Amino acid sequence: MKEVDIVVIGGGPAGLSAAVHAAKMGAGVLLLERSQALGGQLVKQTHKFFGSRQEFAGERGFDIAHTLMEQIAQQEKIEVWTNATALGYYPDGVLTVKRNENFRTFRPRKLIVATGASEKALAFPNNDLPGIYGAGAVQTLMNLYGVMPAKRVLMVGAGNIGVIVAYQLLQAGVEVAAVIEAAPRIGGYWVHASKIRRCGVPILTGHTIRQAHGTTQLTGVTVCRLDEKWTMIPGTDTLFEVDGLCLAVGLSPLTELLWQAGCKMNFVPELGGYVPWRNEYLQTTHKNVYVAGDVAGVEEASAAMVEGKLAGLAAAFALNHQTADFAADYRAAKQQLNALRSGPLSAKVCHGLCKVMLEEAM
Amino acid sequence: MRIENHPILAFADAATVEFTFNGQALSGREGEPIAAALHDAGVRVLRHSPRYHRPRGLFCAIGNCSSCLMTVNGVPNIRVCVEPLRAGMTVETQDGKGRLA
Image (cartoon, rainbow over all chains, first blue to last red; front, side, top):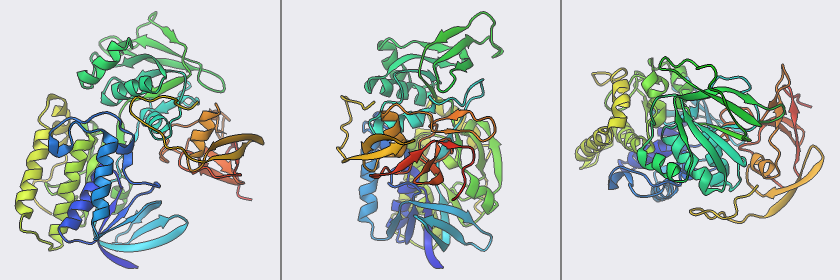
């Protein structure tokens, strides 16, 4: 069994940032990533980010991922394990890991969980047919591997992911029949929504799926209108002949390890589901377990990177690692996070965070 | 189908490798997920569910959801969305839960 200062679980924006900043403080870090490569979902984001220069505004997601990976490579204090899945975290502080086909155990002094989130499904008849994908799956196929998911796609969800991926489908040469959204208005940034409207793709708000069609795979989708009480209006059915249906209906935090660790959890719909209680240092009710990114509440990658920084700094500080500019660095990151969450689209997230914020340090 | 022209992305060329899907000879790019090569060939039905034998395809593409379990080189329950394609692989549709030989 190996002793480590800090183990970071997850090599996405939050985990990469946590590892870099913990290592800069002088802590030894083991970064675990279950897939073959670091970068998480950033590597398939072809759009330019918003925010300020600190959050890489104006840069494309995959470029941001590469910048973070370079920072990781420069840190001698960080050991990176890819193809490594954290399996369990036990009351005696032991973390079990499967790397390739080997089983290993660690006793980290601090654990930073940055496992991200998984895509939500939607309930409707035939929702299991091949050709029905999560929006992220479509991004993976197109933007990482250069393969088209289908010829003609219907997108469900006009939040940021829905409108961004709809545009990416057009860029890949896939026809987008329409974007439908159950809510009465578009949830994503209008700059992204406007792009697809300019390309002639209708965005149908107040619409949902009645059912999907097909025997061996998807051949079409029947869509209908919703009234103000979100019930389906009879006689408003429209059939879309599509071979692809893309669900961008939200994400749900991947919290299994936190449950197992015994962290106190709360169901917060604004943050995507069950999320851990945490203090301002991103420390959970388990004093050795910190969180950052979507696992702590679904937000954008920009916020995940800043949360990663805060968790990395705080966990290293708790192990008595110190730098001269720690306090200033920490305060600046806090302000950066507050600024990111000051926009009107973040009101929901802020409301959710109030439901899981611990007043005092553990 | 492969994306031919992309306004932002350029896809690195990888070696083409041969594999079989239910006995049929197919090719793909070495190291890409098996599911990507199958999609390129138009194969989207990857398994049949245990109870109602319904067709299942790719859903999450990052190893979360287990929708894409197939039998690869005789081993069942392989998540083909994250399993790299290698030359000579035998890939088969999986029916039900799969059995270890």
